[in-house]
Length: 273
Image (tube, rainbow, N blue to C red; front, side, top):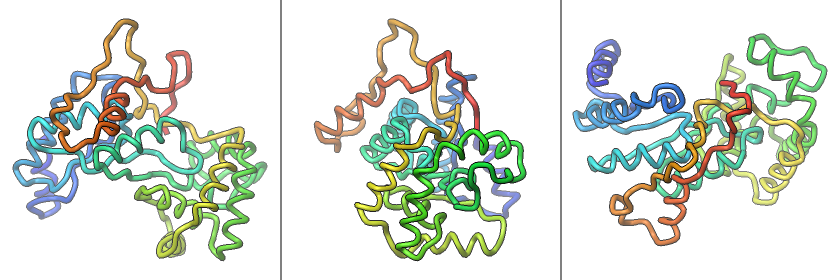
């Protein structure tokens, strides 16, 4: 990890970078790699090669485990990047957000527009945009999210914003940091329109209810969920001595998060987005 980080810095002509981030957990397919990679990021941080440590597509249990591992060295995870949007606000995301809040980890929301399905540019039966993933997902999802698209349109009209700007602002209202892709200057300028204002609690609640009324949702990233523990395997709570600042209530939530089985059963399909 250190050698790879140093090589990247040489290519960029820099002495350090702001963030070293693991893009996904290897717990589902190569669990023996997890701790060496966590330790490698810790080495990079201690050598001043990176300013902060981040992870991506980690579930609540893995977040707890990596935070515990780094705490042994006086280090901590700064950010967790996960799929989070009005189409991806499942119990798993909400649990992860609660754990991150407890641990002081900022949540970065990727795909806040659901691959463009929340932009208002596409409807059921419309021509599907290019790209294998979109050709696969759009026909499955667009027909089931009418209530959400109608509520987005209503809020956007009242706010004199676009549906995309409302969808991104919803992520901000949920205290996350949305990262939005842009292929054109016009898209980048539209994204900026999501800043400088905030949806009201009533508007957020209305959007949440509309999302809950949908019959389809975004496919979840398989790397963010893990296989359930084998029967009889005890839970692995973190040592609370590593987090002395947590209150009793927070400690309970922190411990519970390490016990939870993630939400996909072995019989359910696992598709990466």
